[in-house]
Length: 514
Ligand code: XMP
Image 1 (cartoon, rainbow, N blue to C red):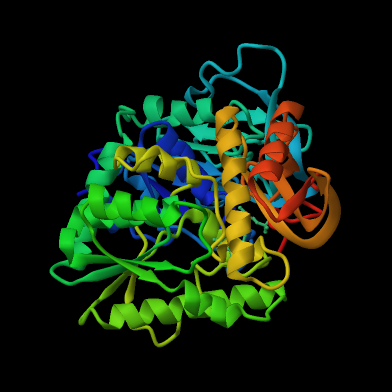
Image 2: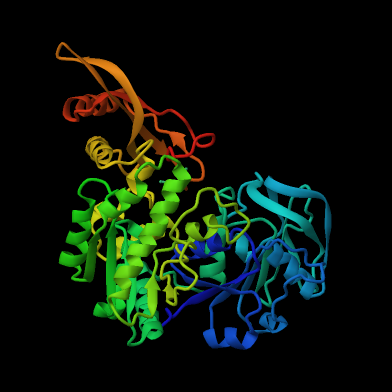
């Protein structure tokens, strides 16, 4: 079941396509990203209130340029073309597109000309509007019936429309943050031009997804690897809502979790949601495999492989299973290299699955951004601790224990890390900070405690602020918080006699030490 009001984003391969979808959802309108060559018949059947053509890397003048079904322009459904979408609209309807003499990348000043429904309420000040451009081609002649709505120093036609046919187009990117008023333009398109009511909510998303999952799964069975993190938790809860006991969750406890995390998983999924939960305590197995290993990438590989092995062994005991539920979210899809972004560290929740695995993937939150997943998690009734949990890497403490990973070192780190989390929460900083955690270094230093000379480990404390983990800055924490954390660790965790604060940003450092 789809919500009553749907907007389609035609995907021409642009890097901001999911961002367009996200902006539409932020304006409380349901939206789906579909391939650019969807036929006009299919669109008619879906009966969307509006269509958005995304940007894309091609030039409309190249022979391989992706085209949409020309019938789309005759459906009477409002269309908004963005960047490539604008050039395509111009070219297909008889206008002209050429290579710009100067290419525009980044910030530009946009000047409005005439009145347009799309820019309603935006052009009242004589100042130009700051906008974000990223294009090589530009429209040099509008098609018959179109008027020019905006220009920049290098683009005489930076926005155009044919109000009669309900066709609108902009050369800049209203969906990115650098076009600060872009959301207002999108609102004008969706509410004013398409007539959407803006009443869609995450609750309707849940209903639609639950229905969709039921249809896909039928009476078959699914399995899900729960990690305790928000993404797999939301995916599992959503699928459980749809198919109940046809879902079995497997929690592979690799012994590298933070303090009390396994208990939290039990409490939430077994006690609160009453899911079929298999808790495999495989700590010894993982530690045995990690014995003597110090190379970070090797640690990751061993953990990834062992994880899959344990998971498969457990799944095999369940009999006939057809689906594997994964908590893949949109940033994972990008980071794992489906587009041109290079793989920086190997993540093991996308790809990495054995090729002979015959399960079909069920990825119910694949289109969502992290903050949308949080809203969904709250909607599903997941506890605060999971909804607002800071990101935690799949290999767990193994990449925060420098050198060889041993039970003793993990326990030491767990105790120190717990104090950090407690104090950061107590200071009201937990949600503002992207991640705050301890790293157990392999360095020993001399200290003095109660007249006794000590020779013990150094604990590093790292706290970073970030938007998306691609870049990060070290957090300027109040001295009192730093002091309290150091004091407590030094008093309460024997085996650590020195605490240092990491003031490295990313780049050049990564967030994790390994
Ligand atoms: P780095 O250390 O590359 O980390 O700056 C960026 C973000 O990714 C998390 N991270 C991982 N997450 N599996 C995961 O699921 C992994 O192997 C992994 N490695 C790093 C890290 O905690 C940070 O949020």
